[in-house]
Length: 349
Image (cartoon, rainbow, N blue to C red; front, side):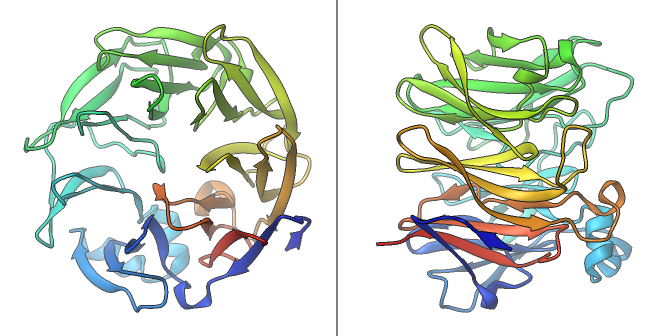
């Protein structure tokens, strides 16, 4: 591990080894560990279990081994606290609600599907939107789903025609324009960035056409979009896009495919992934920082562990869905030499 940051300090949180921080808010921290959820009021208090997500016994048993868990992808990918106190949860290939300490799967999915981390959006009315993330080698139709508070099922909000995309990387809510932004991939013609201001009754294109528009996550400011590319065959860049003109420019090149990103005040953070893609010269997972002046720098990196990435997961840095606790950014590690450990990044006074 190397730390070239001057402004930021990276520290391990040893008491949280084995836990992933899913939601970080003042007085409300939610953690996951395999198919269980935990909560505490701060990071010094021992997390208390609040729910168990039902799963086949053989999967639960095999996931007791870390490699088994990674092989099965037996883990939570999103925890979203809703206005009524329910938790909207995506786990493995299911979605559901935790209410009064009990988890119930939500019906309405046409087929089981994964949802990538932080890749579901809450709109201004409290509805949750998410897209299907499947291998979809056949290029069948792909769906955007919507969960409305108070309902007991999800509904289809939008359908991509067969052959148009491989899958949906994520849907994100833009507070500044009150719109939803949808990111798709993977082949050049399937790489699209779309936005909708009416709950996917209609969509408009921000950009499309090649891997420079292939993104998994996106960040918003008052006048710009920021995203890092998930490009397999070209160098990966962090871009800024003027939200009015849609003109874009590269801020800088990064060491690998960008999966996840978070904004902390005026500071932007992007995580690259160790997946040994043709475009990746160094097989590491790294955290990149873009300061308010648009300067891009690598803060820390972790080498991929010895286990095959396709079978046992790429080297990734998992960020909480919500990260609003003080001035710290939290991340948990998967598939690197420091696997299953959690760190925080904080400003140096």
